[in-house]
Image (tube, rainbow, N blue to C red; front, side):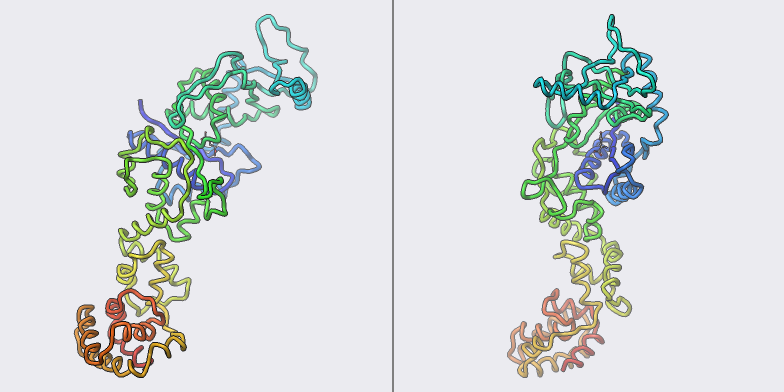
Length: 463
Ligand code: GLU
């Protein structure tokens, strides 16, 4: 069997974290088996679907590198196919025309509710051997209903939740086509999964209720059933459904906040699936390891700190030129001047260890790209009369030494000993004068990067 999975988002909003995780697992499962990953856009809800949302989904998938092998298929472009299947089901008797008006159906439901029964369609137009159907009313456009089995039950072994059984009595004769002929949701999904020869359906567990209906339709079509796995929801740290107040829910807010796709992928991979104690792994490892046996059945909790921790890990690993291309626009937007300043990749190599996001990285790197404006009070506090002569001597000696971090460090030792000072006494005012701030990476490394001329000019100006 060739594995064929699909991701089938409804384009009614951005790609959220839950959707991205579903896409990732479906993608990884196909990759694991050398199978095919299909992208299908379920855009039949005309009121809520928008081209912007389609684009947002495609952008999110692209940012994460979840490339599809087939599609995107758009359900709106498959209407002829759905009509064809409706017609063949009518012909085969697995579906039938129903002329009840919505009001009549509502009235019948009301009667059942009043009698304490589960409200459902009463089968008025369902053809049965020997049963006489009501006369066809004039001028009424019928809906098409699926002839759901009356007895028995539907059972599937969910790859996440285990065996699930639903009695057919619980299921209505579902409308599969509306009076104007347009097909309905569960029907389209079933036809698509059949036509696209999907072998494994992974999706959110808000679809569990749809699965028995889809299985019955697929059975009626004579289709082979896929395996189903329903992934539990992603919750916020407080246990509530993930929403805006837990931070970003749209995947595309993460690149804007300075997250790397590999951090997001690693995070989502681990959120609902495990491989022993492994927390950090590449997508190559993930696709090699990913299976359906280690999916977590309980809801996953979104933990932004862990995502930030992973992002820091991948920032440290990332190539400095690549980081520079992400940081450069942020620095420029913030008014930093890159021309004539230390090379960005070299600066990033120095400052990236502590950064949790690309934006934090840009903030730290900014000290190299902005004219220092030390706070006067701070300067008065640190640039004391006791320190001035030491700084002046340091500057003098700077003119002579070889310009390297090691030589600058040795120079500090020399000047501190000669003036009887401790490192912070000279490092703090130096930081202020050269960078305008008290927090910087190691001062010898910072000075080396700024270059002799800039350092001398800024000390000179301050003194
Ligand atoms: N279109 C559905 C959604 O976005 C998914 C349907 C499915 O995966 O079967 O929730």
